[in-house]
Length: 80
Image (cartoon, rainbow, N blue to C red; front, top):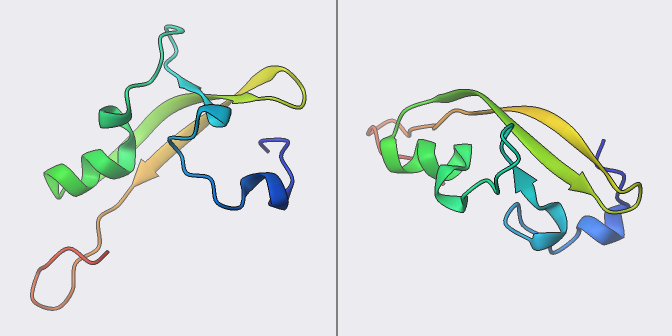
């Protein structure tokens, strides 16, 4: 989907500049608004976030629909 090999992805995070994410407006997607950090901060699910990810090998952008669902242990503590 991203047009990258396993070797190109190993050791990378979602915040790596290679995956430069953008909003539908074309603006850079702020790291603080990524679905997973938002779900962790709010302890609530985040659904249907549209993120554009640049594919360096093809020079285009792919659009992803992203969800994040926090999971809790038996004591109600966020599992990491």
